[in-house]
Structure formats: structure tokens, C-alpha cells
Length: 242
Image 1 (tube, one colour):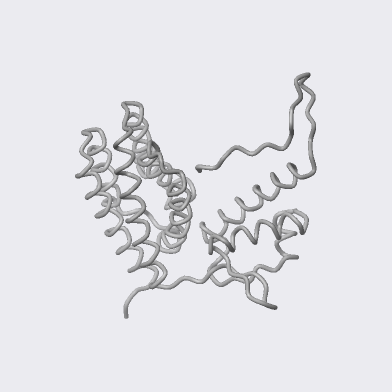
Image 2 (tube, one colour):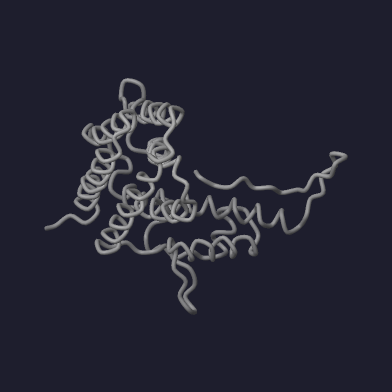
């Protein structure tokens, strides 16, 4: 993930660490936030599920203050909802919401990829090739005969994050992370526990090849098509038409 490092202590010149209550609380809140977010994105906490504070305290073995802070942060990213007198719930899903998320992803990722090419390096190319290799190995049933799971989710995310990693638009990058989490939740609803179809990887290889060739126009076209095709498969699986 593209998270800033967390610090739970200040260090003096003599090497002694001075832990502060606020920094410890902030770190704990961030840890709970990340665990909650992962459980929502991976659909361990399902859409619409009520998030009772007592149950969450038990689940994550944490106090009420950092738990509430983490929940409010998640509500700001719209992964959970907060209703008056009803408390927190995992955000619902709908075809309309998925369509909006994907439209925003296309706009944001094309802008970031265009900017990434302006700062392209050989190291960037090498990192994308390595990220694709990891993604392919996880999907290669000779090496990893399991279904779509958290390992695939992480490798897939890292490929796309690496693709955009040389972009110098930090605010847009943060917005992209939020949209990625939303789209990943739909992908997990669609494919969790199932074997990934082989054609899913064709788009990633084409993107890798376009980057290595430094063909920005082709890469942007391929990325837009990749997102569109992937979304169609997700939509068919999560919201099948009768």
C-alpha cells in the first residue's frame, strides 16, 4: 500500500526514545483503520453489515477511542456509513455505485499514467516487469493452485500502483487509492474463492509491454480498455441480469 510510515515515538540525539500518548494513539488508530479497511475490501465484513462497537472491540482487541477514530476515517472514504441513532454499517453496493467508481478510476488512472510517462525511468520499467512476474506467478496454477485470494489482491494492486508510481500528483494519487479500494471490494465480491480466468492477465501483459516500449498513447488506451473489460466481468458476477 502507498501509506506514509507511522511513527510511535520521538528519538532524542542520545538515542533515548520518548514515546508520546498522542503518537501511540495515532499509530493504533492507523493500524485498526487498515485492518478494518482490509476486512471491508476483502468482504470479510459484508456490504450492509452492522458494525457494532462491542463486537469490533472484541474482534480487533482494541479500546473504544482508536476504534471510533478509525471508523470515522472509514466513513470519510465512504467504505462505511454512519446513520443517526443507527451507528456504523459497511457501505452497501449497487450497479450505479460501481459504474461511478469505475468512471472515476478511468479518469484518474489515465491522468496519473500520462504524468507517470513524463517521469519514466529504466528503474520504473524494471519494477513493472517484476510486478507483472509476481502477478503471473500467483495466478500460475503450477505454482499456486489456489483461487482468487488476498495474495492475488495484493499482487494485482501492486502492479497497478507500480504502473502509476512515477506520477508526481500526490493529491490525485491519494484519491486513486480510495477509488481502488472501492473497486477492489466489488472485485472480491465477484471473484473471491474462484479461479481467475486466464484472459484477465492479457491486459496486464499488454500494459507492461507498452510501458517498456515507452508508448504512452497505447498504454493509456490499453488501461482504459482493461478497466472497462474487467468491470464488465465484475458487473456480470455481482449483479447478474435475469
